[in-house]
Length: 310
Ligand code: ATP
Image (cartoon, rainbow, N blue to C red; front, side, top):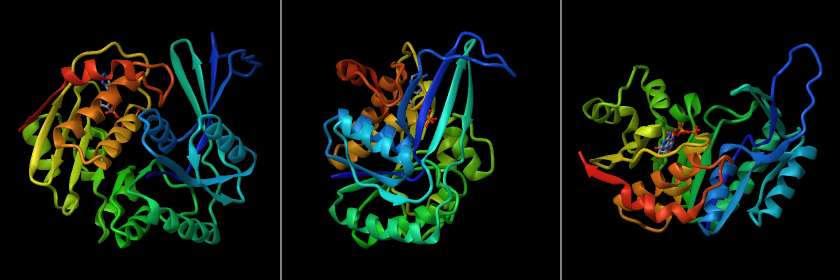
């Protein structure tokens, strides 16, 4: 069983407006509300791949219940830990070809709630074959919370795919127990290293050999329309992808993480791990709905990718 973790989920609300008027009333007809958060996007793609998956993390209040209902309706198994605060709303106003976002920071997690979560999480780890953690940590949790969770996974010899950024990623990399795989995009990689990183192969090779990554088996740098660059132990790979018609690339990184998790869980070859991840990222970019893919186009794209040792 794959376990996905979303520590700061949300109800994602989209308000499409022809024009967005400030300081007056805007009426919206076509409102869409979905269970959101990066880990839930990963979960939805894994479900479509027919992998056995359980979604976990923290949920609270009326909106937390609404997320559970949404997951139930999608037939997704979930096992969240309760919090007293209310799960957040994230609003995207789509207007005049622009996207204005209003993101609530979300509930503040108490020490007691963190402890209840870690106990619950430990039980899930025992039954998991692999775990995938995505997104930011909510306020109140220490920045090394993912590092603590990875330590628990190591106690049970369970691999972790980690997709987060900033301080929580840095602390997870500096911990004694390492994630099996991280998937920064180029911006996140530059932020980690504190310097610009271009898409030049030699520059990327050097960047991924930084001591910060010592002990991390897989680093997959996703590069949007330019595909990906990856390091697995001492091998480096360039993934070249064809040009595609893009509808909405938001969440492509999450779809990529679903592919990495699924393929590694299946024991696939490096070539197939990287191809599956990129094909799923591309399939997400070809759809309007985040975390939704059309698998009918999977094989055709798979055959067009090129993974080479560099
Ligand atoms: P997000 O944060 O929106 O989830 P990300 O920055 O983590 O995205 P990206 O590098 O943008 O991740 O995308 C992940 C993968 O999806 C890419 O490696 C690529 O395979 C595919 N992809 C994303 N955008 C495009 C695009 N415009 N054209 C083709 N493929 C894309």
